[in-house]
Amino acid sequence: MNKMKNNKKEIINKTPRRTVARKKPSGLKKMIVVVFVCFCVFGVLGVGAYLLGKFSLQDIKNISVNTFRKTLTQTIGVESQKDEQGNINVLLVGVGGGKHSGGYLADTIIVASFDPENTSLTMLSIPRDLYVREGTHTNKINSVFARGYARGGKNIASGANLLKTKVSEIVGLDIPYYAVVDFKGFENFVDALSGITVNVPETIYDTTYPVVEQEEDGFGKYGTFYLQAGEHVLDGATALKYARSRHSTSDFSRSLRQQQIIHAVKDKILEGGVSVSKIKEYYALYHDMVVTNFSLQEMLGLLKYLKKNEDTDGHKNALNINSIGLNVNCGYADFKRTNPGCFLYYPKREDFNGAAAILPIGATVSHISYYDYIKVFANLIFHDQKYLIEKAPIIVENAIDKTFAKQNKTMVSGWAGKVASKLKKFGFTVKEIKNAGLELAKTTIVLPGTGGVNYSGTIETLKHFIPVSDIVVSTDTGSTNLEILLGNDFITQVVGSGFDFNKFIEEK
Image 1 (spheres, one colour):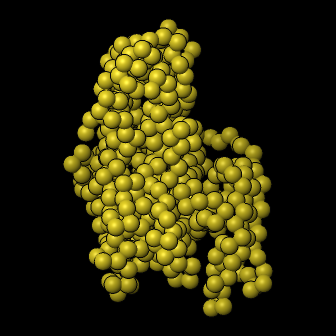
Image 2 (cartoon, one colour):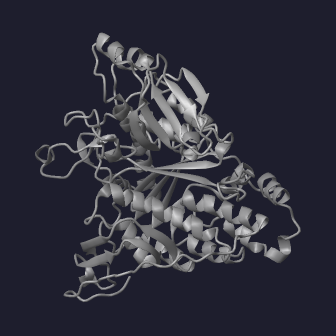
Image 3 (cartoon, one colour):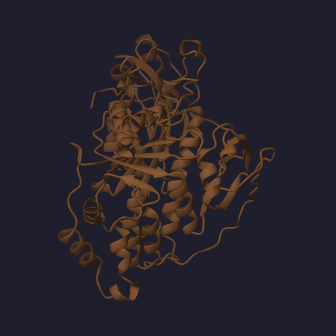
């Protein structure tokens, strides 16, 4: 980072950039860099890229993608450890280490779950202020890594394993792997990419961003980090500040910024300007950036999961990445104010000696380790990733007979809004709510009449939240919306058993 005097503040003022069209990479080259992207997302940056980088485009231009993948997979690659549903799960941890403020407190905590069947990866960020219990003590989850690191004699693996155990308890997921990323290595890697393109949704003005200097008197100093809303090309130092800044926004928005950085790295690697030989340079940065228990052979074994599926732009070997963060932003009265993953809340500060603690919904001061709702949510987004990939724009409509509702002693209106908030909370894309203008006995899903969209994954997952009695196709061929018309059976099957924002209507 830049050196600063004690009385000097650092101000970074970036202006938005213009969008420039870039040449798309070829099929084989695309496959190779997608392999590398898998490693990037898992936090295992560049290990397998050493072998891949040995090949120049001239050396391999006559080798088919299938042959290249099959050769590496069968001769070197081995199977990765999977959970019962077949996913490969990794804990990503970001730490400053050394002279960085916070040292070995975990600054980034992300659970990444790769679904080989759909070539999809879901990332779930856990806020560092979440309070957890260790034995008879309670503290923020970001301190777990530091304690493990110290207990193990300043050993990264010890810190990662202790944090991995705690995170597994929270999300109810078997997590065999970890990848710990060092801040300075991250800076160097982004600089090696010649920067990454990021669209900043809101201006950041953080007057208490920690300043790290090489001299001992640099500790405890703060600078001002300013980044204007808009699209920017960020160098390594600025990208790190963007990922770490927390005092101008919230810990939750910061978690999503960290995932946004991962997306940006992926996009930059897949640009046409990144050559296969360039990946050699990324490998050279690996040892300065990542500590992981994900072996080279296991990473090469991932090659067989790279299918020839296409993304929305028709590109081969697309890797779908879904980003969600646990947070407190549940606007039950207004679905537009509800964020995916809002399974946390703020307890009273006085109960935690004035600290800004965060607890899971359902937890209390005397029982902070209540993770039932989080586990249900995590199981859904990790093991039913297809609905996250489809991103069906949903319209929820009230078609409940008013007389029927009154007879069942429940409210007549407001159900569309409640369902919309609950669906958003569980990661669905909800576009609108309204009255249907008709009354139905059965809850009905209306698919768009375009013919090419069936939203099969979305429909299957919706069965956890509403009775899916009828499915029809709209006559409107100009829409891509999926409409949910709540019928009378919603009252009898869902409301009658007790509407709950945090539970399925049936246990999966």
